[in-house]
Image 1 (spheres, rainbow, N blue to C red):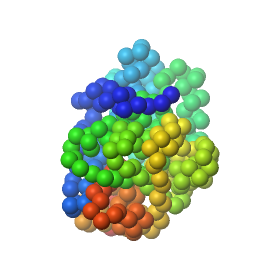
Image 2: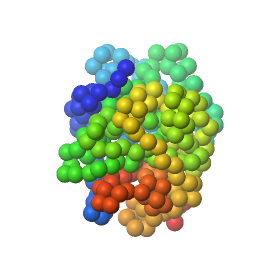
Image 3: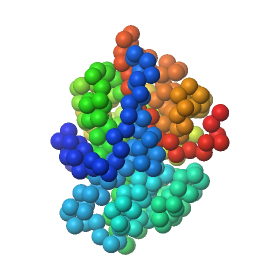
Length: 306
């Protein structure tokens, strides 16, 4: 199933009032931040979660069994928050490597948290099995049409809130965010995916020309550590000629620290990759090119920022 700009507009209408319209911050004449880190539960993920659950509710598929999802942390937080707001239970499967701060936050949202496996892929297998057994609605972290459409509402906000921009840099994990934004923007701006060198899921998928499993790790693996890129996102990035740029572990850590020192933005490692690409020249804008860097998440241990 293809996600279209019309799907994204419908998602925007559906989730209005459920999610925050996050601000943009013009930090220089040619650089703007989209501050998605101030979204509910600290990441962009509630956009897709609410759209998925509200569509299911319209169709009668959101029942008293609630939802099941798998997550490195942020998708689980979004699913738990959306489920609580809609009055249904949530069971969240997370890998044992999920940051303690995210697991603790999940429990404050009344979610039933199950830790299993060392990677997102293992948690996802357990979630699928649980959904099949219990009849709960499966919320995928990134590869469902409603989820991709929900994340794409960020692109609509950029078109409405900025008079001009040329390029949008987007952190890439499983691809729901970049797939949605690329679809929303179409040919009105260039979209570039930014990935850690140790989690190059999009880069290797584009090289292969098909969906493959990719080894992932590193400091941003809790949010950008999907082993397999989403099928819906792959269709979107190929259609919109999205490229991948890789950044080093050291540059991610340095960019995260600088976002705090210079802008008082406390972000998780995965959210710092877009700024890392600019700081290191991994992405080199042309003269006068107006770049938007999506700063996508804030769920982190603040004691690790210096």
